Image 1 (cartoon, rainbow, N blue to C red):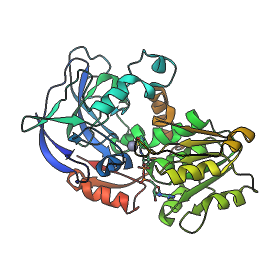
Image 2: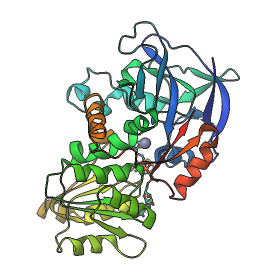
Image 3: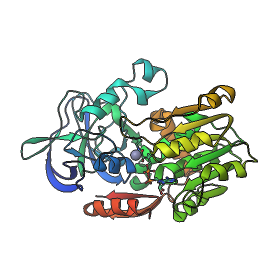
Length: 367
Ligand code: COD
Ligand code: ZN
């Protein structure tokens, strides 16, 4: 079948909407008719070359839609079901899946690094040439084929534009708080980067009962969003040294938890420097492959500080996303407030331009 899809042909180019050919789902695969695709900075990182991905590819890793068809042997979902594609496929049986860290599953890494589905081929072609999948999701397409292992059924009454955000921004941010850092009630938290993912770290910290939540960004507009998501204090890093401000706000001690949700080595170091003794800095943003960050050994040892990272909220999406849905229904998780703008699919490059200008908390494209 034909589908309009946003293809990135090369680093440095814009997304191009093309009519691609989508092959039928094979054994263990699901054809999704996308309703909405989330506009996340990680796709922008691929466009600029900051993050490496096999190209040409249909981008998009946050989305929600309806099952249009299933391949042989699929039992988890059926046509008509509402679903979220999960951008880290997990096999379910390896040591990482069994150990509660499915985002570390080698099968997920394989799909992300090759741009192929598990059988080593793609379901997208353009003029007879192979087009790669991005993170096994490729949500910037009217139709996408996703492995059954990477599909999560969701309730039919959840609006699909909100549901899309659960698949990346929300699970990545809230998960980093609960699963990676394990923020304790009454603690102090700093969040570097109040974008779509960072705002979910802020709201996760609020849900976890943090006493002080200090949001750091370069844009006052983002800091205003952060207040709405539960930040108790904000620091504009353009105006001064955020580490000094965080120390001043915590009686000189520093914070118990710091999150870097930008993807820059300088802010990763700032997150570490803002820690109190026994503090934990969680890096969510990524840098180009060869970038390194250094920290003073003395504070690692004499202050027992921790520097760690978190992928996909260190989550178990099949357990955590249904809980997030219940929190949303209970009025405790801000999804409506997160979705600040909706673009028609053919304005996807404008949606990314607005993200770069810092105008939105999170936007989606709809089909
Ligand atoms: N100091 C403070 N804030 C800054 C600075 C700085 N030096 N530079 C930029 N910012 C702010 C921006 O103003 C913006 O508000 C925020 O940082 C970034 O937000 P967004 O909305 O542009 O980005 P997100 O939230 O969509 O994505 C952030 C990530 C860290 C997830 C992304 O950039 C990334 O590194 N992705 C790769 C990691 C990955 O694959 N994650 C899983 C998929 S998302
Ligand atoms: Zn993302």
